[in-house]
Image 1 (spheres, one colour):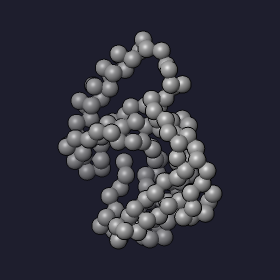
Image 2 (cartoon, rainbow, N blue to C red; image 1 turned 180 degrees about the vertical axis):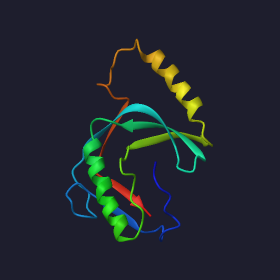
Image 3 (spheres, rainbow, N blue to C red; image 1 turned 60 degrees about the vertical axis):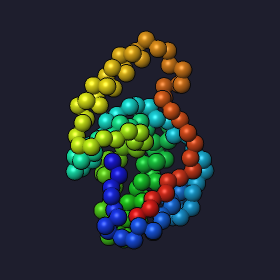
Length: 136
């Protein structure tokens, strides 16, 4: 899960980091494959999220970019991202820790999809991107 950093610094500060290693530049476009449904709960356990997680294509590129952002956060005295980031898109959220109910729903989806043939090459959704942008 992302960190809410609005209390740490001016929220208008924008940091864009690219694959070239040059801070502030975006790199070449690459594919990101979202391979797995997952459930996340924020640190405060006030929100639960149904998300698509990146486990294949694009994972190494995104992880490198997160590490670049970590360096910039540390320069500004901010806490870094999680030690073991899990890139994902949160699609739905609800109040409180409803992870058990969301996981039950995912189990049912998995049961329904077991007999379906994989038509997407092993991923649920894919897109192309050239970088990430953090607003803190």
